[in-house]
Image 1 (cartoon, rainbow, N blue to C red):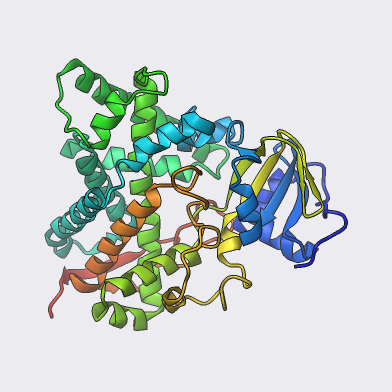
Image 2 (tube, rainbow, N blue to C red):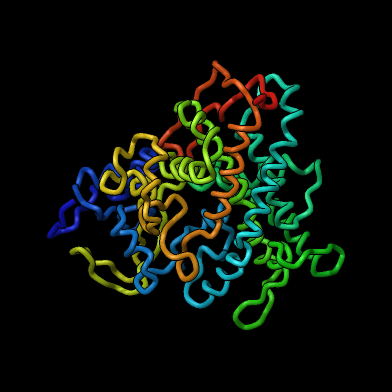
Length: 421
């Protein structure tokens, strides 16, 4: 797309309702209309710059130009992230907190998460054989909640599983919502924070043991740059920021099952595939299907880029969905094709379903590695460890308006049984 002498401006006094009406396509629609990677609009009662594409992502993740403080609205913090969590931090404090999360993402620990996920799926099989219909999304939430809590060292009673999994999922479902969905998200977060605060208190008082190296232990005893431990509320918020994203992988797993259904040739390839092909399939699920629509940051100090004036404190949104479907980056982006990742160079700025940039010094989500590991284990389970039929009477369409999106029927399976080779 060509540069403009003057950055395009979207019409309207405030386009927040239009954003809700267009969802994932809000930014891509205007980038196509204006033939520009950058445009200005009014959202949330302020002037906002929207950007899309690899080159703009490189600018967006420049920590000298942008900060996260003040970017996430309180309504998002009160549902999805938690107030004053790592997603809102900058500078040395952010880097210090980020190292805490990165310490959980070693190869050994990630392999353990994959094994726990696989085991939870296998434990489900016998019960599924006795049921008429299985709703994959609902089952995936429970599988991932159990695996996440076991991996993190958080005790979880059998009677709690459904409520805890539902609460984590409801927090995610609230991020693009207003009205009842938003308020359900706030109530879910309040329940989860109360639960995890209690767990943290028991660990610190010695009533509950925690194994060093687990997320529970590390959050309970983490110290900030001044050598002070996190207060109980903050420790709970950050521990939830480990658990909740793992449960959110249920969305990708459901879309992965849909990809297998719509493209049965890939089921055959995955059965005979090595580990690298499973990786390519998982990456294509993450690229192709809708997850996060955009991310926000605020301008740290004013600058000019591509004829656009970025004013200090201004809110800027980076188009996640549009960048993952940019035809300049991805050949035939609306075609599902895992093979495109055979020659992918691993860029930090084109495949950005969970954000881009550098893991250690930037704001790229360290949970991306956990997502890939859990998805690989889950796709292997669906392809190689069970046989099933896809229920004929269901709606497998998904909306690009509703944020977050999901197949309407949440993928219903029947006649589930252990695979016979």
